[in-house]
Length: 525
Image (cartoon, helix red, strand yellow):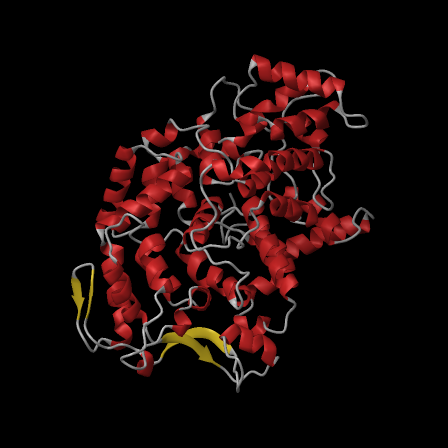
C-alpha cells in the first residue's frame, strides 16, 4: 500500500500516463482513460490467488466486513502482513495515500462546496455528484475501513437530502462531521453533528427557540438525539428528559450572510414566507435572546442556570457518558459488523470498551473485528443493495465510473445514498431488502456483460490472472473470487450447467460470473 511521502502516484504521473496512452490512440476521453489507467494505478496484481478451502477464507471474511468487499489482491495483502496489522493500518486512514481516489473525485467537484456556493446550482446535479462520489469512494478508496464506518455513521446520523435545505448542507456535513470523526471519538462526532447546519435544518434545530416564557421549544432534534443518536429507544429516558434537552438546545440557528440569491429558494431553505431573506452561511450561531437560560435536569443530572451556549456541551456530555449510550452504540456496531442478532456477551464487552475508552470508535472497531464472535460469523449477514453493488464491482476489479447503470440499480433497489426518508437511517436487517432479488440479478447480468455504460470489466484478463483459461477450466473455478471458498458440488453443477446451456451471445464466462454474483452465496457475507 502506497503511503504519503513515498514514491507513489502523483497527478503529474497520471497526466503523463494519459498523454502516453493518448499518443497511442487508445483513449477517447476521461472514461476511457480511467478504464485503462485506473487498474494500473490502483495496483491490481498480475497474479490473483484464489481461496482453496471449503470454508470461507478468514482474510476474505475480514475484507467482506471491514471493507465493501475484497478486491483482487486484497486477500494477499491481509495474508502478507497479518489481520491485526491490516486492521491497525486501516484504523490510521490519514497515513494511507488515497491520491488516485482524489483524482477520480475531481469529477464530483460540488461535494467540496459550501452551502452558500450551492444555492445557484441545479439540485439534480448536486445530488448526482453526491451519489457518484459515495459509490466511487466505496469501490476505489484505499481507506477501506473508514469508508465502511462513514457509511455506518451516515445511517446513524441520517439526513434525508430530499428535505429542503439539506441537499445544499449535506456535502459539508459529510466533510466536517461524518468523515473526519468516523474513527475518532463518539463525543466529538455527536458534538459536531448537533451543530451541523445540515442537522439543524433536517431536524428543525434552527427553529428551536424560547423567546418568551409561553413559547415551547422544538423537540425534534432532542428526541432523536436521545432515541437514535445516543441512548437508544430503550435507554431509560422519559418525555421530561426530551423536553429538558430541547431547552438546552434553544438558541442555535444558522448564521446569515449577505450573498444575494433567488428569493424563492432562500425562503424555502429558511422557512421564511417573505421579507428580506438572507442566505445562511457555513456555520451555526448562538442567539442568546432565543435561549432558555434557566436550570435544567436531564437524566437526573442538573445543568445550572446561566449556562447560555455552553448548555449544549453539558447536555452532550451527559448523554454521551450514559451507560445506555455505550450499550446502544456497541449493539449497533456489533449488528453491522457481526450479525443481525449479535451475541450478548460481545455487545456487553464492546460496551465496556466504549465506557473504558470514553467512546474511542477505533478501539471499538478493533475489539469487534478481533473477537471470536466476529471470526465465527461468516455468512451471517445479508448484503444491503449498496453493499451488494459495490462488492460486485470490487470482486471483478471493475474500473467503476459510478454512472447511470450503477445509480439506477441502487434506485430500483431502494438504497440511494442520503435518501432514507426517516432519521433512523437505512435498515440493517435482511427482511426489508428481500424484494430486491430480481434487480440484483439484472445488475449482475449487466455487470458481467459490460452493459453498465462506462464501467467496464475484463473477465478474460481476470481469469488469466487467477490462472484459469477458457475451455480448459470450468467457469465455476471462479467461485472463490466471489465466495471466498470453493464452490460446493451443487453450486459447481448449477454454474457449469447454466453457463453451457443458456445465454445466447453471452460467453460461458459471462454467464458464470452473472450467476455467481446473483447466487445466494454472494448475497451473504
